Length: 198
Image 1 (cartoon, one colour):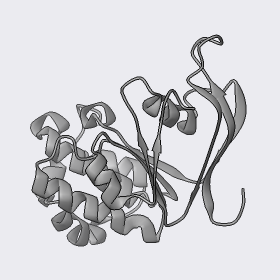
Image 2 (cartoon, rainbow, N blue to C red):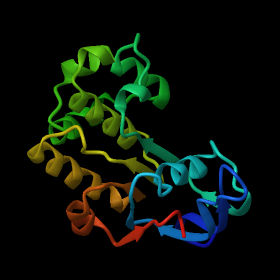
Image 3 (tube, one colour):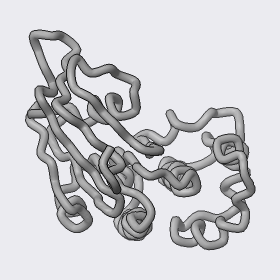
Image 4 (tube, rainbow, N blue to C red):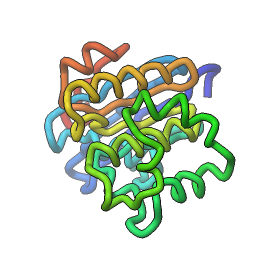
């Protein structure tokens, strides 16, 4: 992979059925410091693209190269185990002491430290989504994949959350999926409109 690239997709071809392709010879590059948005209607291939990048699906043709990657899912309840506290789950992933960093990050996400010692079902969808963002930030990825990160947040917290996400670009690149074209226009270096990935 060329210098400063954190994601390189070349000639990606994929379909769940070979006679019905979602992507055909699709190319994408993402450099550190860039934020690109994937925009398209339901069924256009946005989630499938993330699954391919994460390696959960295998392309029919083409190649995907990526650096250290973290993911923020649209449904935060699916990304946390229901029987462990948020703190325990972040600690298990990081395997390092991160308490010192919380004083800086938590206020920007409008989160209280007490929430981290609760289990996922004890938090609202918006609180849990911000915990998901916190975990991703603490992982220090080179590439951050984000699927509708503010859909469960009110407008003010959504704006503050996106400002924090954009501030991460000093250290990583971001690939964002959103239906909010205004937000995409505000924060993106490029908006990629998918029409079945072509």
